[in-house]
Image (cartoon, rainbow, N blue to C red; front, side, top):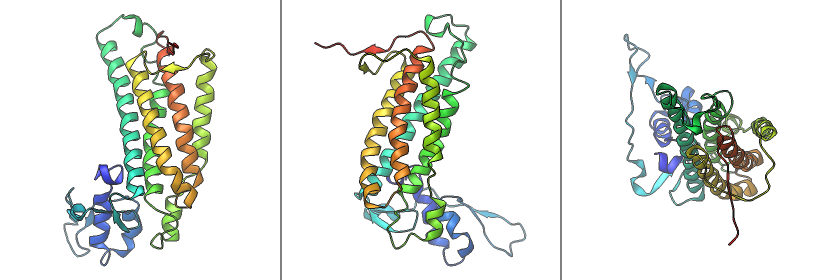
Length: 260
């Protein structure tokens, strides 16, 4: 369930619960969300695949399952953090798809509007691919959050599978540095706006900050690696700078704060 797990992962965990006794050798992959189907029988000549339903009904009692199959109340902080992680991912996806569709439309219709007078594919080489990468990394963040390091049910193999490498933080920093080389110096506070692409990126930034605030207590308790908190912190910085790039490359000024 996307609202509970972040990325629709409860179904995959449910599979692990149902198949644990007869599919032990697949258990770790299931817990990490690596599969949603199994061969129905080793003796099945047709080697058919068994499909599992999206709804499981296991959450009807107000609980949900983590990657390590531990069940907790849906009001648990872990699910709050997972929900915000999922929401951040959705916001990034909306921004990315909007930019792609907007520029595709203007290319197809030869629109010469001032906002598209710049290279119509000016985001294809970096911003859009970066956002796509970020969406996958946010699923990795969700995996880490859904696998509490201090839980007795989190085995060493699970910890290794959910390890979040600091190289992901380094990658975002390099993208920020590259963007800032092309941007004018920032001399004012900014209000979200300019192009719709920039506004959507600012929205994603604000949601990411909320996600970071939910994850930070888990970092402090030792349930989540410090690198996960670092990534979310840096990601919000990236989204801010990317929003400025979204305006700058099409000749639209950022919206400056004006004191009353």
